[in-house]
Length: 340
Image 1 (cartoon, rainbow, N blue to C red):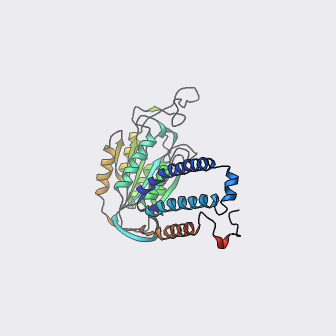
Image 2: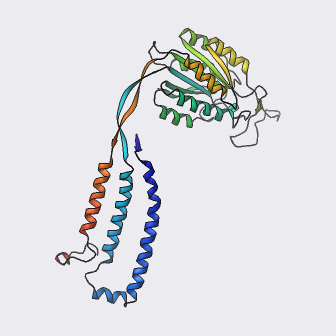
Image 3: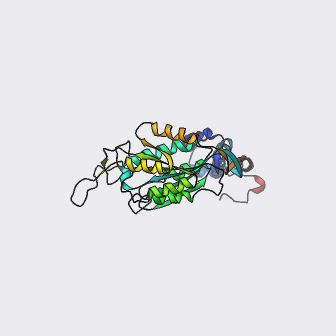
């Protein structure tokens, strides 16, 4: 992994175009001042030792030195060692519904966006846990396997949308079965599955899957997204046109709370409705805190190696070359025309 130790110094790059503009203006002024003394071509024959190309090269060397110098003081760093880090936490599988009905706007900004907001905060809060992400609609897929790397979890979370699963439906049972198989073989750690869904177009088999999970010692809880009153399903995220049925009627999707409650009861977990407040997040946090934590291990970049020596050498070489280049041609190397 790559990062800057002092990224605030990168703002100095804003001054580089200004420096370039000043240099160009000074060169124009210098050329005009020289032309006041006579014809430029004649002046060059009178001053054979002068070389404008050398002065240009010296400037660009200094310009490059400043650029690399800014990177140098920003302290570029690379993750040099991945270590097994032990933390007290649980194993958590989060399955999120990505069916088209999750685009309904009965919660703000829409059901899927609200679900991702809750997930993002949950990942921050449960930083000691190992987390896996599953997406489902008519089918279920593992979006991210079990990991303690919260940075990766955020990256995968940002990629979740309704296009991930082309088959429509709400295969909660399949998502639970996939979640059961996503845990590690460690039986001493507490395990939980959280289903985030509106419960529309339930495919069946969810109650049985939740009961199987409970028998395996896995708590299954459900977060209901939406409202019982429902809302139309937009054709796309920002569209004001809505889906219609075969008769031309606007399709209205409603939260199936009864089904969500039954799944949570079968899985020995809890049900909470997510609205525009933080109630669902607080409930999730308090309920998960009641689970017994144990030591879980995961990979983490524990050290970042400083890479400034590389850029320091580049700066040194550029400055050294700039010093060796004179505005005037050296008499000893007059016949060598590197800047012809």
